[in-house]
Amino acid sequence: MSHSWFAFYGGSHKQLMDLLKENIAGCSVFTLPAKKWHWRARTAALYFSQTIPACPSYRLLFSSSVLSLCELAALRPDLARLKKVLYFHENQLLYPVRRHQDRDFQYGYNQVLSCLVADVVVFNSRFNMDSFLSSIPSFMNKIPDHRPKDLDRLIRPKCVVLNFPLQFPDVSREHDKNPELFFSTLLRLKERGLDFHLSVLGETFTDVPEIFSSSRLLLDSHILNWGFLPSKEDYLRVLCEADVVVSTANHEFFGVAMLEAVHCGCFPLCPKALVYPEIFPAQYLYSTPEQLCKRLQGLCRKPDVARRHIVKVDTSAYSWAALKPRFQDLLSAPCP
Image 1 (cartoon, rainbow, N blue to C red):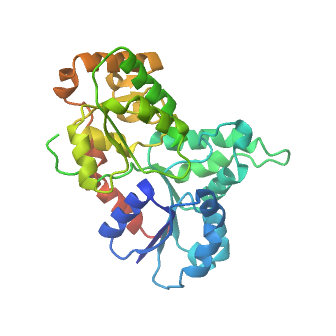
Image 2: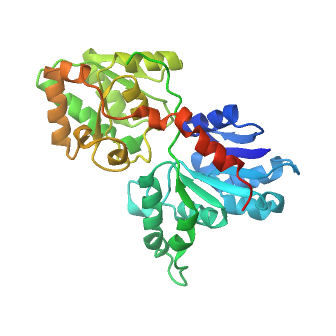
Image 3: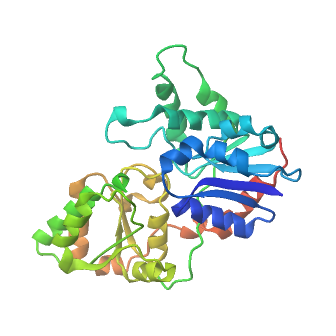
């Protein structure tokens, strides 16, 4: 029996956990709801140490990097003896903060310690892995004295890249996402009298930037859909009706939504940064806000360019069907 849980059960974390639960036999899943993220990172290990029952048939522990695996292993020696797989959906060493002094050292420190305890460390993209490992030395230099050394060299041999698996449908065709750039670009298109329609989709969390409400009023005549669509079918329908999908993210370690949109026939425009060059050819990348605006301006004037274009991204390579054997191998291999 394999043994899996995520400390943060929501969004893409939930999507992955549900997928593994449905397709990998013998999983015991323990989760916490997707709210109060910082408290999950701080305290989930203690909670799970008290709530996960002892079971002699457990042979593998699959954990999100949100959880402090180091603390859990110390509190539960029976779990520490299992093969421990740590999955990085994102890493705290590179997670954007508004000010440098706002970064809480403990979150990244816990992830480094968890890597040292884990047997296998899995990243959803090469960008995620490389950015984490290369940031460890400078991150540890924040310690005033008696700093540990060579941690990246200890962790690197354990690391593998295993893309986030998506279940694509059969179709015919957060401050960290930089909404300011997205909406300012659309307002420039509106000022130039260009014709376009807009769908802004996604979950609504507690702290919504003010620019969302102000932009909704200014762009009202262009809006087709706004906010969270509870039905996956409705969400996919909107994607299939769209021509272009835009990312203005300044933080992205994989980009599930962009690949889903491309699978549904959207022409992608992404920053030439983060994980995007790893997935998207150069023709879909922009380097500056002005480049993004020019590309969208051109597509507004000639929408058939996007509608007739076949995106040069093989989305099937990121599908669960393609990645399932690697996940099965990861979760079924004997303890080293």
